[in-house]
Amino acid sequence: MLRDASIPDPRAGTDERRRETRATATGELCLAWTHDPATTVRLPLLDRSDDGFRVRSSLPVLTGSIGRVHRILPTGEALDESVQVAWIRSDDGGWELGLSRLSAF
Image (tube, rainbow, N blue to C red):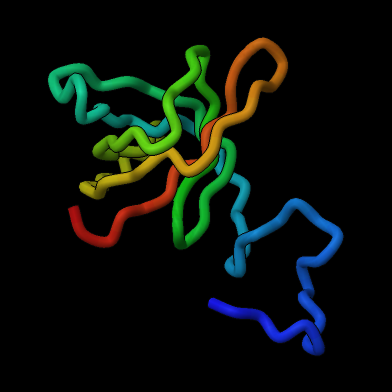
């Protein structure tokens, strides 16, 4: 998508690239990576939006990795959707991951 330079970008000057708002979230995201679908991992959930999740991991994960979200704990909210690692950054001895929802996979 092209942006006309004469129209100010409301996100200019920030690191924020998303158009929808994030909702602070607590709990854990239960997912299985496609390279090891038999193993479910639990990642602390930091926030969520309509397009994805931000989680914390003790291990780095490659950008582009795909996983399948099964559930959010402790609420037990059942999900069955694919996500892809959009970005990763180190943070306080661990890693933050941005997971984008994939509409069809």
